[in-house]
Image (cartoon, rainbow, N blue to C red):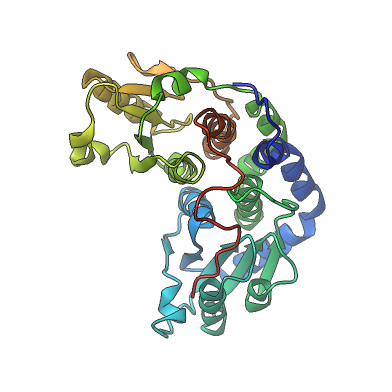
Length: 344
């Protein structure tokens, strides 16, 4: 589906390769400093602090850290600090706070609490200076540039790219560092892909499931949110390991399902679940050639299991922006939403 109208969202999707390249070119010293701080700390665990798309970025980084650094990562609720006034014992840990605006009061409050508790804290934000940057030991400007569409796209991607770059410096994982360096090239290729077949089968659906496992589950969460924001339909993200444990009860003939599979250890299991759902009559589209019956969608293979999952979000963004317009919506101005939500 080629864009016939140049929305802010479409422009910002097209800017993803350039934004990632700018980030990786300009912030080499910042990544090195944050990585060195984490090596010095040698944390026993990592916590993340975020909401919305930023929380989906945090979920992606959770899997990346657990797979690469072999440390447990937990998301902690910002309300613990802003509403409940709880001071967590985080002295042996590290904290990663993610916020595009850098000024959501609850995110800032918990990041500040983590820093005061002794955690090595890192802010990933698109706004410097900002209260969040001031609350953390280290701040990384994700350099996504101005983002005018309400639905975050390039800031989501750059938050993850920045986190992966810090992770590469922290662990010294040369394969990950090379894969991150190649991301702008892969994003450029991914931005050209079209998922017309899924749009045709989804039709006028009012409910969609998005599946994934591992890092791709974080992409599925982000995709489900973007379905809600830009098209107004009900969308839920599930692990492909969980969808058959209850949610499958709602799946019937012609129910649309998007299965996001990366080239990683989970790809085969996601494909197997996709085939089971096709057998129930669902319209299933999958980013993998391993499914016997689901409809394949084009994807970019990056050569690394973690970055492979991240590249999936770019063609999805292009798809959902165009599909939103085809259903009579304005993806730049979702109903009842504003760009910055300052939750307390």
